[in-house]
Length: 504
Ligand code: MSP
Image 1 (cartoon, rainbow, N blue to C red):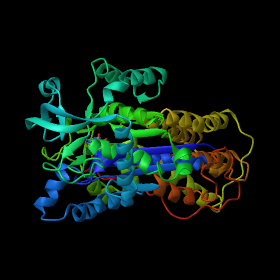
Image 2: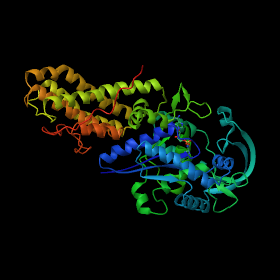
Image 3: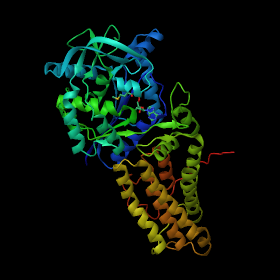
Image 4: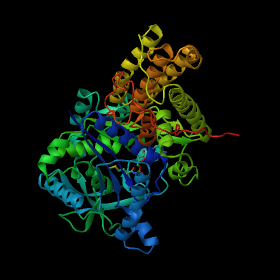
């Protein structure tokens, strides 16, 4: 038994939840479910980022108090997670006092230790990103509105930790994944790191956590939001809880917020003398026609629309199956339908129907008794014995698409096995217990049972339906040993919950 602490980014509460948010949260949920089944102690954290300029402006537009505005908007995320069957252990909002009090405490302690200092600074400020940017960034990036600002502000001595961070990355090969992203950060760290401006004067922005040692300022949103990963698990308030869960096993994030996590957050932790998370994993983007989805382009796939049309589990499956972690993936409606029909309706669902129908018709709806296994049986059985281990290895390596492919490959093998054996023909000759037909159906049902258990973290609802149809609902999900579905077990009623999507 070990512990597993996984986080998603805190989503901007103003944004309408989209497929990118859903993707990371489902990924975290799949990992959390998988390790929970294996008996680990799991803590899965998500939540919302609720301070900053954009929230303040949105509340003003709606003529609302910002707190009332975020209280209303946070429900959109909570509702979506509910609909997607996300089982998070906590949902943190950056406006909660369990968070804001701790942010103030860290600011005070860093200030007292000289890690935060005040300075007059003149620089280029990006209004959309709400931060000072370098000239190089302006040349490279496309910031919509850049202002020259001269302001007194508070700075965190980020530059001081540059070497320590490089050393940490070098000594901990799993700290930033995948490798390409790690190299990007190491490249970034080859230039001198600036100190980080962590305050905003209230004259410009009031919706934030007040700086405890200078109430004319609020805290920069990123400094505030990043701390959620430790405030939610009791840093500064519940040492026992904090020491149990920290360091996080995974911070799951999109590639656009890697610098804030790998550099800002890591140096904040180094300054606070708190160990760094074990792995920061940056995934790619879901694209629409090779372009990043964005509200302004109007090409955002809305997860809720998809769920309403096709159900939660197929959407979870598609997102996990079609993105190779780390790379971008295109979201095409027709690839969703193709994937669903090929993997879920045909390979998996039809097979379940075929096997259970034959058992109902010929063996009174009870798992038949196997005779002596021959080479064909043993080939499939050996695959059923090795697949759970392969799946586990791929999940530990965050290769969820490969883990799903391992399972589907095993299910496809059951299809081949049935084609080779043709039990529907054999039955006509001999359908006694222990016959080849009986053995074939018993082995096929048990391998399908193992496959369903392996698919359960990705498709929790529909695999439960299938496990019930196979009579296997009482076998613990973690038990993926072959031959657990005993002869004589009564099958449940019903059909596969993956009907074919008509494409005509
Ligand atoms: N609030 C910050 C995170 C603070 S974490 C302490 C933030 N929020 S966000 O709502 O804008 O983005 C959240 C996540 O959604 C990011 O990881 C981002 O990469 C991800 N995605 C946004 N669009 C995406 C796609 N089209 N595809 C996949 N993920 C993308 O940044």
